[in-house]
Image (cartoon, rainbow, N blue to C red; front, side):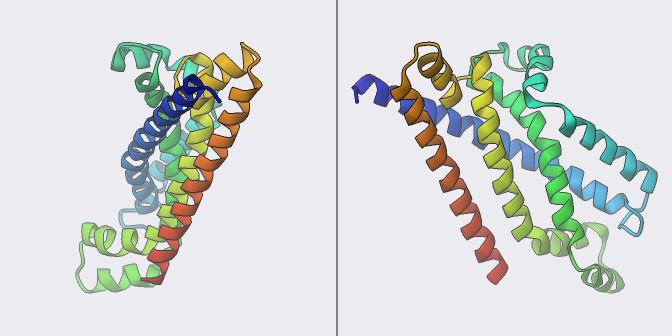
Length: 217
């Protein structure tokens, strides 16, 4: 294996890591508040408003229904406005984040809804505010599920980041297309696949370990 290929693989892996990490962080920052709102506004929630909860859920589902490759193209003007270009790693983070926010929001909502309502009622009966219930009951109790959901989100983002390579986003997907497909370099293509498998396996193992650790605390 040549030094050039090793350098290309290393650089593409780093770019993929940056894309997945940044968009994953933004997905949590945007998706978790959405999930909390959907849980709080449902019937019997902390601030019940079922019509608003249904509307918010509908918006989330519509965003999730858009295929990523189409979202990638639709958001090109928005991406240019935010980062000044539609090419490269920084540009790919915009559509990846917007795709991941509603995805993680639905997963987080499921984890939050699984929290024992008796715990919420007990804190409420003791005079706990809504913020205290969210801060000390909902999020801590749902944390293992949230970590498991984030793991699934990061793995999905890894696949999407490879897809973003089709429009020059950089990373392993871009490398596979430019060298593996357009130049018929099967060695590079095979290496990219192996790196992606290892990449996903590491994310899954780390997510499982952290989630199990939190469950046993």
